[in-house]
Amino acid sequence: MRQVPGSLFVPATEELPHDAEPVASLTLAYRQMMGKPPVYYRKNAYCDTIRFSHAGIPSVTFGPGEDGWPPTNEYIHTPKAVPAAQVMALALMRLLGGDRSGAPGEPR
Image 1 (cartoon, rainbow, N blue to C red):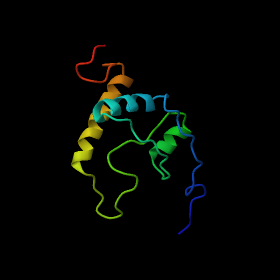
Image 2: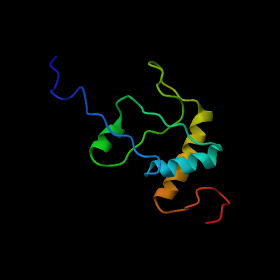
Image 3: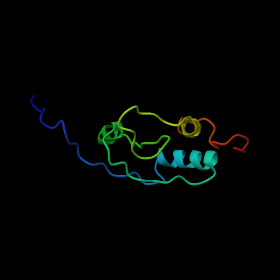
Image 4: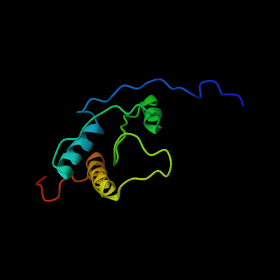
């Protein structure tokens, strides 16, 4: 089997500032849903975020759980998935021009 040239490694990407979108909207939504600030860290693994960043699309990796995953029988814990989906919904509403407060009952 022959390796396709350039198929194994991709250039690194720069981290987005915490006040840049979509990080700012995710941060606000996370604080509102979880009651505490998020923990930021660099994900040193290959995923679509890298390709989007290379195309000039600001991108982040966000989701339930910790860095890494089980190598077999991959899974996530439902108690972590539900709040993550809620954070994403609030962040997307803010990014797409909906409810700018991001939190139910807050004045606009």
